Amino acid sequence: MGVMNVRRRLAASRINTAGTAALAATALAIGTLSACSSDSNAAEGESGGGKLDVVASFYPLQFLAEQIGGDHVSVTSLTEPGQEPHDLEISAQQTAQLQEADTVLYLKGLQPSVDEAVGQSEVKTKVDAATLTKLEDHGTEEGHEHGEGEEEEHALDPHVWLDPVKYAEIAEGVGKALEKEDPDNAADYKKNTTDLVKKLDDLNTAYEDGLKNTKTKVFFTNHAAFSYLAERYGLTMEAIAGLEPDSEPSAARVKELQQEAKADGVTTVFYETLVSDKTAKTLAADAGLKTDVLDPLEGITDKSKGDDYFQVMQANLTALEKALGTK
Image 1 (cartoon, one colour):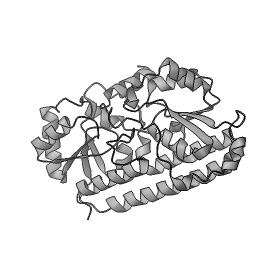
Image 2 (image 1 turned 90 degrees about the vertical axis):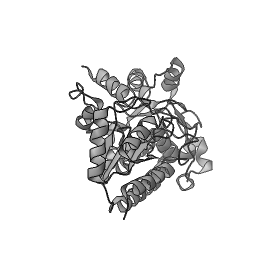
Image 3 (image 1 turned 180 degrees about the vertical axis):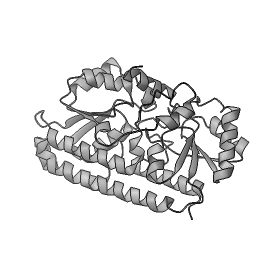
């Protein structure tokens, strides 16, 4: 099977995260990252005083572009509010928008239609976030979750933004790309990148401290998006992946998770903000567990527990601390 087919299989196998994948039209800017001088606007970009036109494939990259670019960039996202990023199909209008951009930020392997459109476009600066950090193959684990017959169809797990350390590496790469594309404002991009990475370092420290001493290290989720986060902080994610949002887990899977819940002291089954909680509640009821939200941060909506990446990640940490029993 070709690489593209593998990616399509991977995208199709993901739990439908339509709710949490909704993207806000704009992310709230962090004041400390907007140290851009208004009198330098005339020198911005390469279009005679206009802002650098940046197209991001989905929210986590949109957020980086906005925080690092500040007032010097105009950022748009290919994934609109309410869309599920894994299954995004690029429209003709978006293809034209992509062609006119100065810079495109995307994550190869996450959105096959974006990969194809970017590959065919003549955009001057193409930044693949997958090349800015190390992606890992979590296919063995997910192959088990997705069912038999898929063990040989592994693909690199794209959910790197849920690991603050890897997200910081991507931020640094995005910053360097903007510096190169718009050298007149390189000092601002560099400062904004440094400030953003510092905040991500602080977030990493908060996770390390908050999850260091817990009663259990195992958590259940209906979306296999948290492998990087789990690895970073010594946790074990068990995902009920491969099931549609409204379908119930098989009796065998429920029994397996019930046994693990008892053995490892699991208290909570996590689901996502705008995805049906039926599967999570079915498992929780059968296993005598609680339910709560763990947001994969593929988008921000009015139902998200926060207005931007940092606020939602803090909400995720609070939820994990409660579920795992921080001592």
